[in-house]
Length: 335
Image (tube, rainbow, N blue to C red):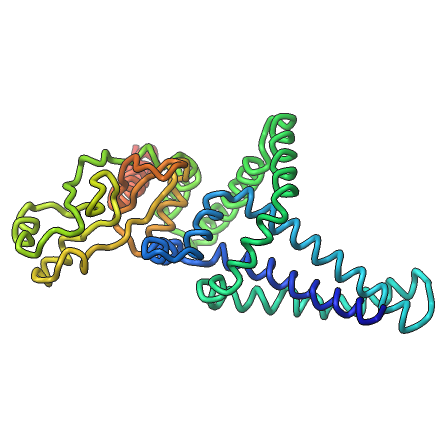
């Protein structure tokens, strides 16, 4: 019985480390790096991207997996306490649980999260296949959690996400006011933050440009055409699949390409940051800033291109809005 309990404890700790660490890795990993690996044929990166586009399934798997791990650990601790002390008493079980809690927290939560925070992509490549297996095994529970969440959304007029967003917005507004009163923030910074709060929740489609805005060239375009492409005066050039003209695989920053005009198109092509049409403005701006991208493509749930978005457009929207609000705020004082 002791051997069985030790086995359950080891498996429980491993599962806790797997789900806790993988959860941190999923939120920390650079999506652009995954997309590059997926285009190159990496099936693990493709699977991770597939799960990232289905957050309800991913969250359901993590919740179910962590509960399974906690159950195995609790069962093992209770059996070990009873076997080693020969006492079947609730106090002994509670004491054993309290003694093991720091060990479980450090080995099953703290260390895995720290490791995945430091090297999310590398560790996800190792744990990804096992997580995919548990995604399939725990799919019935994940589906049940999704259905329950949808039922709650029908019963409760305001979704939990919206409620949390409103609470966070009110708290942030209070922080901004305190910062302004303390002299830590200037007027322009306050106006920028206000625009971020009010406009940042709008879908990114409000700022998208049609795909036809930029020229498209196939990836296998010969180097002899470099001079023609560079002389068009375009800021960006979209690059399509050699055999599928409707499939956009990347883009070229012409301003950078001019510095090395002899390089083939394939070498200067950058993978496009793919953004779901339902994503919020503030999320898209953060992603583009994080990855250092000036251009992104908007896709629907079936990964079909819907339009493109420029980082310059988003930045100018915020700056013009802040300048306009600052001017409006100063007009009464001037009068």
